[in-house]
Amino acid sequence: MNRVFSGVQPSGNLHLGNYLGAIRNFVRLQEEYECIYCVVDLHAITMWQDPAELRSNTRTVTAAFLAAGIDPKAQIIFNQSQVPAHAELAWIFHCVARLGWLSRMTQFKEKAGKKRENASVGLYVYPDLMAADILLYKATHVPVGEDQKQHLELCRDIAQKFNHDFGVAYFPLVEPLILGEATRVMSLRDGTRKMSKSDPSDYSRINLTDDATAIARKIRRAKTDPEPLPGSPEGLRGRPEADNLIGIYAALADTSKEEACRRFDGAQFSTFKEALAELTVSTLGRIGAEMRRLLADPGYVDSVLRDGRARASAIAEANLGEIHGIVGLLRP
Image (cartoon, rainbow, N blue to C red; front, side, top):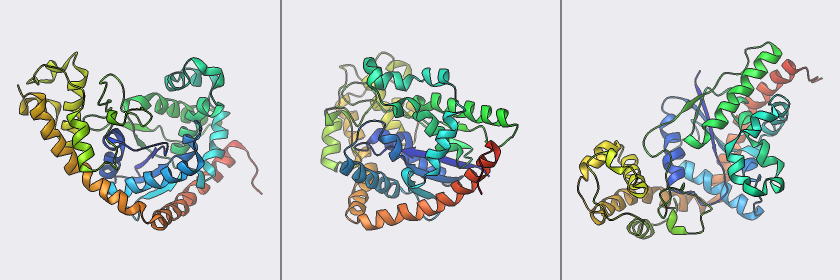
């Protein structure tokens, strides 16, 4: 059985990068896999979160899953903190993973920066929790962006060491799924930086809840360069903003960068941006409207999470019991 696990942090406004890099792929993967999709609220609190905003953001991510087209009856949607087995397996993995492995994680270095001594312990060890999220359900595949490949490699290392240490073949070695164009969407204001919820400029990103007017305005104001668009991706080298916008167009149009370049060969950015704005509005406008409708009915959103929690817990508790037996933890 092939099973996909993936999660999204409820730590701010969801944006185009979250949709193209993750949520859209979640929708497509449900056609081929059994899928478990998690709102990873325990990961979010590795950095301080306003409690009221965290609860609101958890519902927003859930609404985005539903609005994009994930079927909550066929797949499992839940928030991580409601299944305690995630945290318990993370502790077991703290005792399996090696300090040197975590020290090599580049995302911790980037997020902690020069104030590393003041970073939370959670931020340092959260790759172990990520491994627990995945392996608790014996997931075989995880859709990841380029920035998460290192964490998935750690997950594989933990699974391999656990299996070796206890002489079992219990955990699968999870395979990454890297899908489609624009898996790494960059800022509309700086093509060298990833599109981010935390960027102070709202014009750096397209939020999933933006209306048609806001989407079009942000694309028209996106940073570009004075040259016309090239006829092939080779002409995008050294032009990060042009490369980013072409990548976004290709991803939304379900085509390649090569085809997008051929389509707009020699065009000025003013012409291209109008086409990109129309395409983005046609895709995200429907999702944003459905998200707003769902968020007006939080009782329904919560019911989806409750149902998902029950179904996820049934799998998690059964597997955790087996893991306890392997490790030697007594369960009378």
